[in-house]
Amino acid sequence: MSGGTRLENANPLIFERSGERLLTVADEDEDVADPIDDREIFDLIRSINDPEHPLSLEELNVVEQMRVNVNDEESTVSVEFTPTIPHCSMATLIGLSLKVKLLRSLPDRFKIDVHITPGTHASEDAVNKQLADKERVAAALENSQLLEVVNQCLSTRSM
Image (cartoon, rainbow, N blue to C red; front, side, top):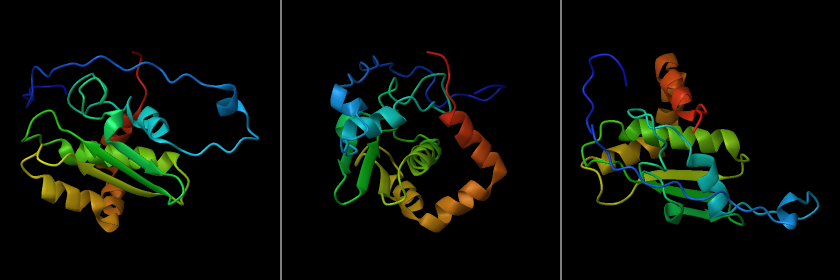
């Protein structure tokens, strides 16, 4: 965040990044059915940039692999995220960034549920309601300024 804007959480705790996923021969074999699993989803979202800090959501412990749940057979993905502070005004933007990354990355057959870890945010019900509403998400993505901020969160940066 730049300019004279005051950070809500000026000194967040920074966590160590988890190691890279080790690929097996079966993972690389295109003839072997490879169901989507929790780690694959975590790998998609772990490097999303925080909108307020030059850190990834993984480094801030906003996303954790243990809070990702995938059922490939039923085509469902559920991701819980934990804002760094209970009154984080960026929670909806973070949730939207997670949802957009998954919508852009996964086959259309998947139903994607992104929500705040229960008990970790003062407005979790309101934020979860917004993130679960397909029309609100679609409308948000029609806002060019908001889409630009989401795309900045999704852009890759050097680690």
